[in-house]
Image 1 (cartoon, rainbow, N blue to C red):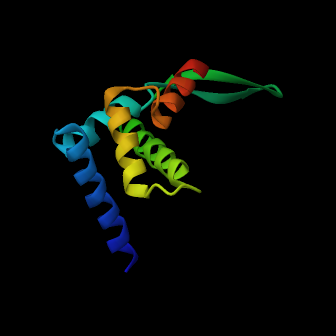
Image 2 (spheres, rainbow, N blue to C red):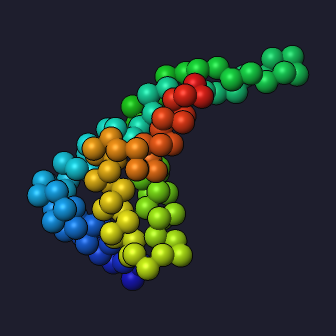
Length: 117
Protein backbone atom coordinates (compact mmCIF):
# COMPACT_ATOMS: atom_id res chain seq x y z
CA UNK A 1 0.00 0.00 0.00
CA UNK A 2 2.89 2.34 0.83
CA UNK A 3 4.46 1.91 -2.62
CA UNK A 4 1.45 3.47 -4.36
CA UNK A 5 1.90 6.69 -2.37
CA UNK A 6 5.46 7.15 -3.59
CA UNK A 7 4.50 6.31 -7.19
CA UNK A 8 1.66 8.84 -7.08
CA UNK A 9 4.00 11.53 -5.71
CA UNK A 10 6.43 10.95 -8.58
CA UNK A 11 3.58 10.95 -11.16
CA UNK A 12 2.24 14.26 -9.82
CA UNK A 13 5.77 15.66 -9.73
CA UNK A 14 6.38 14.80 -13.39
CA UNK A 15 3.01 16.32 -14.39
CA UNK A 16 3.88 19.54 -12.52
CA UNK A 17 7.36 19.66 -14.12
CA UNK A 18 5.79 19.27 -17.58
CA UNK A 19 3.32 22.09 -16.87
CA UNK A 20 6.04 24.37 -15.45
CA UNK A 21 8.75 23.82 -18.06
CA UNK A 22 7.08 22.21 -21.08
CA UNK A 23 10.08 19.87 -21.21
CA UNK A 24 10.28 16.10 -20.84
CA UNK A 25 10.16 15.51 -17.03
CA UNK A 26 12.63 12.61 -17.25
CA UNK A 27 15.15 14.89 -18.99
CA UNK A 28 14.67 17.46 -16.22
CA UNK A 29 15.28 14.70 -13.64
CA UNK A 30 18.46 13.55 -15.41
CA UNK A 31 19.77 17.14 -15.72
CA UNK A 32 19.08 17.71 -12.03
CA UNK A 33 20.97 14.54 -11.06
CA UNK A 34 23.91 15.47 -13.30
CA UNK A 35 24.17 18.94 -11.75
CA UNK A 36 23.65 17.95 -8.10
CA UNK A 37 26.36 15.34 -7.67
CA UNK A 38 29.53 16.72 -6.09
CA UNK A 39 32.65 16.04 -8.17
CA UNK A 40 34.99 16.34 -5.19
CA UNK A 41 34.54 15.47 -1.55
CA UNK A 42 36.79 15.34 1.48
CA UNK A 43 37.54 12.32 3.61
CA UNK A 44 39.02 12.19 7.12
CA UNK A 45 42.48 10.79 7.49
CA UNK A 46 43.68 10.08 11.04
CA UNK A 47 47.42 10.58 11.45
CA UNK A 48 49.05 10.17 14.83
CA UNK A 49 46.08 11.33 16.86
CA UNK A 50 45.33 14.31 14.58
CA UNK A 51 42.57 14.19 11.99
CA UNK A 52 42.94 16.10 8.76
CA UNK A 53 40.66 16.27 5.74
CA UNK A 54 41.93 15.05 2.39
CA UNK A 55 40.25 16.03 -0.91
CA UNK A 56 39.21 13.01 -3.01
CA UNK A 57 37.39 12.49 -6.32
CA UNK A 58 33.87 11.03 -6.13
CA UNK A 59 32.95 7.85 -8.03
CA UNK A 60 30.19 8.21 -10.66
CA UNK A 61 27.71 5.97 -8.81
CA UNK A 62 28.23 7.87 -5.56
CA UNK A 63 27.60 11.13 -7.42
CA UNK A 64 24.25 9.81 -8.65
CA UNK A 65 23.28 8.45 -5.22
CA UNK A 66 24.32 11.66 -3.51
CA UNK A 67 22.40 13.80 -6.01
CA UNK A 68 19.20 11.79 -5.50
CA UNK A 69 19.65 11.97 -1.73
CA UNK A 70 20.17 15.75 -1.76
CA UNK A 71 17.16 16.38 -4.03
CA UNK A 72 14.91 14.19 -1.82
CA UNK A 73 16.16 15.84 1.37
CA UNK A 74 15.58 19.31 -0.09
CA UNK A 75 12.02 18.44 -1.16
CA UNK A 76 11.25 16.83 2.21
CA UNK A 77 12.52 19.85 4.15
CA UNK A 78 10.61 22.24 1.88
CA UNK A 79 7.29 20.42 2.36
CA UNK A 80 7.71 19.88 6.11
CA UNK A 81 5.33 22.13 8.14
CA UNK A 82 4.10 23.64 4.89
CA UNK A 83 0.73 23.57 3.13
CA UNK A 84 2.49 22.87 -0.18
CA UNK A 85 2.28 19.16 -1.10
CA UNK A 86 5.47 17.09 -1.40
CA UNK A 87 4.92 16.62 -5.16
CA UNK A 88 5.06 20.40 -5.75
CA UNK A 89 8.14 20.80 -3.55
CA UNK A 90 9.89 17.95 -5.37
CA UNK A 91 8.97 19.47 -8.74
CA UNK A 92 10.36 22.88 -7.69
CA UNK A 93 13.53 21.28 -6.37
CA UNK A 94 14.09 19.29 -9.59
CA UNK A 95 13.39 22.26 -11.88
CA UNK A 96 15.72 24.56 -9.89
CA UNK A 97 18.40 21.87 -9.73
CA UNK A 98 18.24 21.16 -13.46
CA UNK A 99 18.73 24.89 -14.14
CA UNK A 100 21.63 24.96 -11.68
CA UNK A 101 19.76 27.63 -9.69
CA UNK A 102 21.04 28.46 -6.21
CA UNK A 103 17.42 28.30 -4.95
CA UNK A 104 17.86 24.53 -5.00
CA UNK A 105 18.82 22.88 -1.69
CA UNK A 106 20.78 20.19 -3.56
CA UNK A 107 22.86 22.70 -5.54
CA UNK A 108 23.67 24.68 -2.38
CA UNK A 109 24.77 21.53 -0.57
CA UNK A 110 26.86 20.38 -3.54
CA UNK A 111 28.65 23.76 -3.67
CA UNK A 112 29.23 23.55 0.07
CA UNK A 113 30.72 20.04 -0.23
CA UNK A 114 32.99 21.07 -3.10
CA UNK A 115 34.11 24.20 -1.24
CA UNK A 116 35.14 22.11 1.78
CA UNK A 117 37.04 19.64 -0.40
